[in-house]
Length: 217
Ligand code: MD6
Ligand code: FE
Image 1 (cartoon, helix red, strand yellow):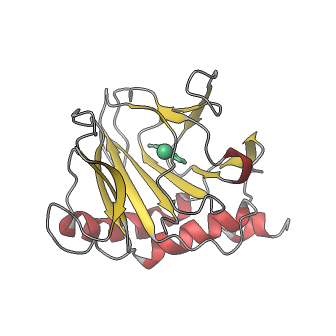
Image 2 (cartoon, rainbow, N blue to C red; image 1 turned 30 degrees about the vertical axis):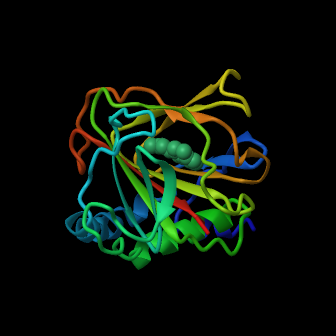
């Protein structure tokens, strides 16, 4: 097990930071994958551009979203769901590039969730001022699979709450390359992102990109 902490980058890796049982932050776990991941994302964004989806309540989301993988998470006036088809293009979502799939599987294994094979990757883009209100991820069929969340670009403050929306939330700073893995008893906890602070990241500029890998089906 200890050796795995060195395998990802060939360098010392920080020990996982446990948020609550089942949820942890792997600091810098994706840093060495940055170039390959950003190159692969260019193709995804060309095939399925970011868009602002509408919640069932009729509100336009401030976070821009797209997806890759066999399934994509979408919201519209009729509800939240996973769909094989991108409603903007009428075509399948672009496939999950192998550098993304490998990163997600490796991070999950590092966190103790071996055999994670995501079939969906939701990609969120935040610009300064953009936030994501407290929510649970519960549109997946199988809550035994974890979620793997990769932060790229500007730092953000992640809110990590309890099983009820009103429960007090921890504030977790997330930087470029950090990976949060989230499953087991923590899988249905409320969480969100505070409004992004202004700034410029050396590679990504004035934005934060978050990848969340899920097993939708
Ligand atoms: C974000 N993340 O970090 C939004 N959900 O931009 C999520 O909503 C999320 O990071 C489930 C598990 C991990 C996450
Ligand atoms: Fe979420």
